[in-house]
Length: 150
Image (tube, helix red, strand yellow):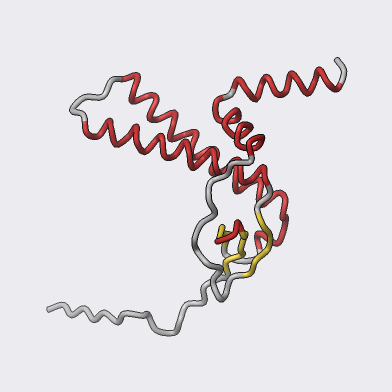
């Protein structure tokens, strides 16, 4: 099997998988979900920006998550849910979770060790990837609560 045949077979396998086909369609079209509107925080460090593949995975996850929410809302409004619809809801939720996990794995694999230097990473306005610093607890809790027992 030559390289062109291998590539064609790989594309056919991707197309057979609905979640990956969705990612593929967004990757080809270049139509991505909008970036979050959250500004970079004053203590956060920009460590990168999403590349098209990561944008496509995030877009597919957002689209499938929206469809999943509608499906769950519809099921919650009805008095009965068929076993088939229930299984579809569960499967849809698993796809959303898997795509979200894949998204963050792709980001961490590409950017490497820098993604582990803070307490976590996040996505901000302009598709910026930020490192979230460790939170240093203050000496006193923000709300003092006094409990008295008799």
